[in-house]
Length: 563
Image 1 (cartoon, rainbow, N blue to C red):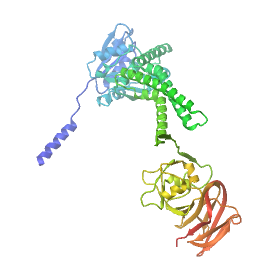
Image 2: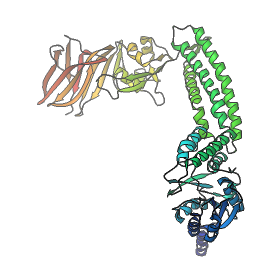
Image 3: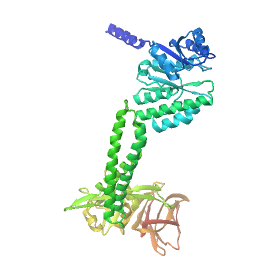
Image 4: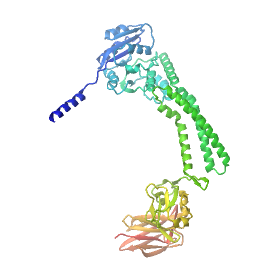
């Protein structure tokens, strides 16, 4: 057994330390009349790790570029005439003998071996197929004013900081799949082809570089060639169609979907518009939407097939997003109507009920100033719960009640309990309660109608105080009226408060631990004080501008102090 573990450890160690297969690297340096800098660039590249071959492509230079490159130790390939940067790059990589190709300009004055290595290393490590550089420099006008705006319009998924960096590296195998432009469009062409073909490309920061500043005439030529390349690729890969023709179809689809939504809204919510008009609007909208959505789908499929790597997700989402949102809105509206459909005795009834948005604009005590509640569906009480009413927490908040409170409906009193799990919009009522409130199973109640349905019911509400004592307040559910707050102080320390409606010149009684203590007339007694076992208890009343559905009964308050 000992030898088994020794052999196993040896095998694992050998696997872990096994080096990956070595890949050779060529550096291609296109040069046109660069006698002043080409030798220095070659010298820096020679010092860089990983580099096995240096090729300078002399693109029809009329100065000493060729001899300077040879002196520096580079292999030189000559073009008889100037063919352009793209042709020089293509010539170099096709005649190289290595697995990885790096392209570096011949006029970089502050090139370092570390910058060269940072371009090559991610490919050697298998992290990407292509690396392109980003760096800080004084110019970049063609990039910012031409390349980026066009790429964002036609290829929004491409978001590199410097798509025209000029310095990049790649595996030779993937370069064979890319169409090299012959001129300054070669950089952006490689970026676009890599994106569309699904070739992984990484942007590497190599710091600041110093180029010779190009004259305005050369920048004009560069901009023209970059524009031609981007427009050409956009046309080739169907992006012009997506922006132009598909864009028009999408806009018409949205018009149709909007008409359907308008028609349905008119049918269900605008009673002053005849039903026939709403139906006609909906039908016209359906015809327009279906016609143009089919066109969008067909054109999208055609364009999708034009893209070899199917790299269109971000662009598709961007151009199709408005139509997708309109479809989602329509589906939500239709699902709402389907959920409100009821079929009974050969009659289909659709009665949509919306939730209530609750926004408190006053200063009444509450847990939250904004919430969305209801609607609630009436259902039968659970077996053996004939003395209980189960309702969601939102409904309790609307009625000012809580779990374990009681509510008296006509001559019977019921305990209030919370809804069961998964029944957040169900109110379960015993048979006698439904009869008294004129409700049936399946009825849908909007949140704003709860106070109307339970009006004149008497609630006994329990509330905990700060010193572990409790209060029981009794109120009648009524329509909203101006309310007042009352705050309880024990030895000048506030221990709790509540609010509700008091009637002027009405007598109200206060009990202590279930025993009658005192009474007061609300108008004439806005503060009430008494002693309890050596403690001073004060109740302070204050009118407010708030409204409440809680109208206190004459025996409105019972305080229970914990000893």
